[in-house]
Length: 402
Image (cartoon, rainbow, N blue to C red; front, side, top):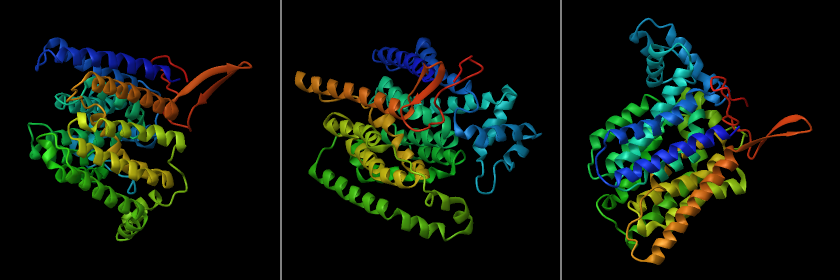
């Protein structure tokens, strides 16, 4: 059922709204704020940690195996040198160490699911906290929960790496910039998923529109830069198959490991309606471009995600590439409004915000929503889209049946 998700989301968002309101009055945290922050991070993590092993594909694919193997190691050195996974699907050291830490707390594999989600939720919160001068806690958590949370139950290791990349990028955007911290966090992310190199593409719009890091800049020159960048991304996107084939062919191990990413017949698209719901928030970002910071940087990331969308339709597994840019909507769509110079502008901004909430909820319902009902004495689960592995939610620990 989908109601455990909705209940968790609502409670988390109420707490986020309360924390945001409290922090408007001051720039520092008091004990009450720390308690609220802890709850915002913990509540979604507990839901993820208590789920049954069939809620999310990666649990049986590697999580249970990693947890079992790390239990057999006698030392940290054994754990770090482990051969968890296979040659074609190796498990990174960071996740193995997390599993080893889990064994200190419990012998139940659910502890690894909890720690994984705790890790992800912490970095989402930390990213919004560093950007709270520009972003809304409430909107950021709203976007994460309805757009990304279910994905984190499937793509556990990659989600850990992706939220670290989002967090690392905040050290290039905020007033207290630190290239060293960006590099360190980026390197650490590599030890949770080796695909993090994709995240380096984020540096291109940041470098091209670097003047946006210091003040709001809306110029014709920057619009032309955006157009040129878009054309380059389109060319690369539609040449991706040939580029990928060339590089994969350079190494036999790469060929064995990555060929199926571009040869599968399975589609990763979600239809015209799903595509509209996926991309419409970026239109809202465009309409708000004059009232938010880092306009061109976030529009560039949105364009990259949009242009890469056809790849995920043609080759299912390539959605993992666009996910790195998709996760940046946690920041881009939660940007606080500036320059609300008149009542009409304020009203327009309010309408756009409400439209964003509606579209994102519809996106979640369309992609993940499921309704339980009985017909003719037979229990049925109607899924609004496809066969997502995280829906319906079930948990023997919480006494929640599918």
